[in-house]
Length: 276
Image (cartoon, rainbow, N blue to C red; front, top):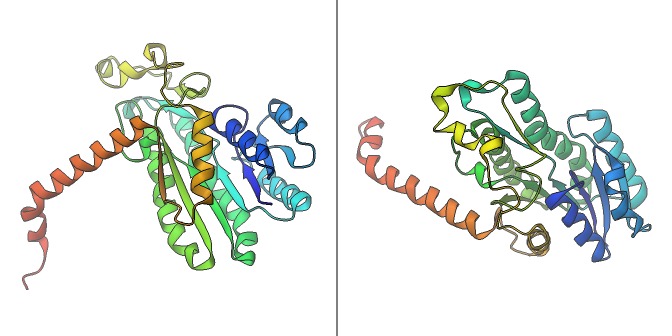
């Protein structure tokens, strides 16, 4: 029986994933900043579920979650770094304190979780780390520069990590969801208080009060959770796992645009080499 430790389970993808894991008869450490919000999940699975308070920016809480997980279930086989939130602002509008908190949650939080869990995985030469990124980890839109930066950082770190720990029998999967019908564009979406009118037609169009996507996103979190489980169980688990038809379309477009630019500038780019 495998044991999963999942962050950010109060709503959305994390909540559905915790439920799907428990429905399969596996163990799950179900975390949220307020564990009361996940108590309904664990009540139905008293033998295999554990609810624990966790703010991923708090190193003390992280250590306690790992301690409780190992005390209750012996080991953590799958770590899912799902906790995070959005932030909208033109680069010039971004508030320093907001951006620091964003990186603390979306990037440094997962890093702390990984470092806390890896000793056990290394000792067993087994484990899977799932880092929930976004299609914003492949391309950034106006107003999402800081959010995308956290996801680019998460993916860059994950790419190095997977090469470091693959020889130790540990895998890394980066999940890149498109738009899902969660609280991401609602309660979880933050934005700058500072508004600069020059950005009204770029970043300004994506401010929260003008965003009409909430509740209309194509992605189904229940289906997304099942795909994540399928990837984790696969012998050939992908490093990057796209979720949603919009994600596939967006990333393919980004890659095609990048390749076109590489080809267009190739003859100039190679002129920096020393003559052979």
